[in-house]
Amino acid sequence: MVINPEDAGGEGIGRVTGIAGFTNGEMPRVQQAAPTLYLARGYVSYSVPLSDATASVDDGLNQVAGSEPACRLKLAAGKFALTD
Image (tube, rainbow, N blue to C red; front, top):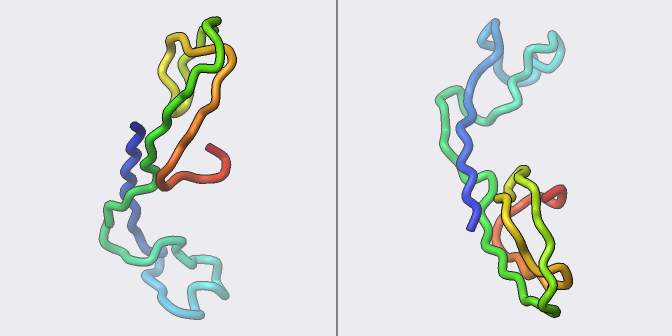
C-alpha cells in the first residue's frame, strides 16, 4: 500500500487574483491561499507469481528494496499518476 499526502497553498507576490495575475505573470498555481492537504497518490498493488525464480529489486520511488518473482502478473488499483 502506498499513500502520499501533499500540502499546497500560496498566493502571488502582489496578492493578485483573477485575470490581473495572468497578465503580470503572478498567477498562483493553487486553488486557495490557505494550505490545503490532499491525497496525491494512494494505491495498493498485488503480485501474482508465475514462476519460482526471484529477482532483487532496488530501492526507488514508491518501491521498497527486496525481492519479488522474476515472472509475475502485477495488479494495482487506486489513485495514481500515469507516470507511476
